[in-house]
Length: 172
Picture 1 (cartoon, helix red, strand yellow):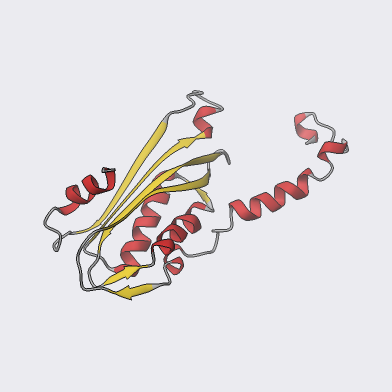
Picture 2: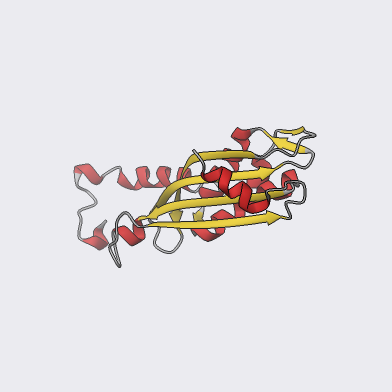
């Protein structure tokens, strides 16, 4: 606080270092945790019908500026003998998001976790997020959203393929 010209002994700042430390513990609780291990409830399934989870809100912290980025995730996969408890897919996203991150890697981490654990016919993960490092500093463009996408698998057992899964993910 002294480095930015504040008085660290000021009443409102006395406990700030402890509050910030506790906040960072939560924001970075994914360090050392495995997104794959978060998908720990898996069931046998004979169908190849798509599973889609939309509207998953996530928060992460840009590793370049330590400012938040946040948005929504769309996750879809075509089972190939296994399905996961859908809350576990959300948990994998949370684990991967709770570490210093870039959106591109976060998207890939989640797609890899789903693909590696479930070994589905195909996976698509899309993240759409606003980055406060773009909104508050630099180009100062609040409201701009970044879309990233990761696809894994061959979609052999799903006639509509990757494009069909994407269309389902975007239908409402």
